[in-house]
Amino acid sequence: MVEATHPAHDTWVFPEVGEALFEALRQARPARIVLQVPAGLIRNATDLVDRIRTAVGAPVVLGARACFGACDFPSHDEAPRADVAVVLGHAPIPNVPLPRPTYFVEMRETGGDPSRLADLVVDGRLPSRLGLVASVQHLDLIPPLSAELGRRGFDVRVGRGDRRLAYAGQALGCNYTGAEAVESVVDGFLFLGTGMFHPIGLAFAVDRPVWSLDPLQGTLEAPIDRGALIRRRQLTVALARDARRWGILVSSFGGQNRSPTALALQERARARGREAEILIFDRLDPRDLEGRALDAYVNTACPRIALDDSGNYSKPVLTPPEFLMALGELPLEPYRFDTYH
Ligand code: SF4
Image (cartoon, rainbow, N blue to C red):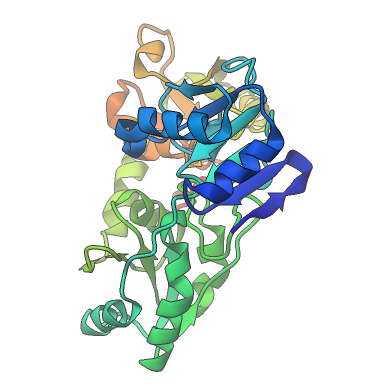
């Protein structure tokens, strides 16, 4: 599979590291390649560098900074002499401009028996009107599993999201607009993938129970307690309500930079008699916020920093919608997920 998903930015997509990728890279005749690998593939990173360098015949430098999504690709300053990037483990984010031609290797999984997995869903007594969402690695399972579930009487819906999502049914930790598009016609969602990162994000975004199915292990997890997740966030909002001095966090990463949002929030804070100072960073380190004369923060970078990592910070860190709740400009209910569009 070789597919130009965003010709305006010279973006190509491959399912795996293999000959199709190598051939496309050879044709590009790069002077230098920068390779970015996510945390889960770091152990193999030097082997991958060797394979690409040998197959393509060009120098390869490895981006060592931890990366979490297609939003924090290597910048021009990080790898100034690389004229091509290879990004592993992520799908492109179609509405994010890239600094150089970029080859995304999505590491698609081919495992998982659709018939057996559909039987598990039946045994788990999931609602018959069911939305399907998958991590990019397991997207290829959606069509055959939908067919198997349909044969068992399920009405399966797969939503197409906004321009931040490359594929229908795709889960991105900051954007579940595909699921939101079908929320009103389903009674629950089934997430295909591993770990709790996406089920938690999906549970914040949609007011429906979310089951998660690990296609390779063949395990079905019960829905997470959405109410508990939201109560915890509402408590954080309550703690920040009286904060006078706010820090507004802005990331310089190409796909995490919401400067216009930050400026708009600064205006809102000042209109409500609060002080608000914009702080810019690339990757946020909790130590960078220590010792500042600020009472609380609102984070415009990756929404999951506030939702998943707030325990790492000594002051409350809110998402933009939560900040508006703290200012009294939005009600606490219904809870609004900070969708990054
Ligand atoms: S902003 Fe966060 S959740 Fe969204 S793609 Fe980047 S790392 Fe993932």
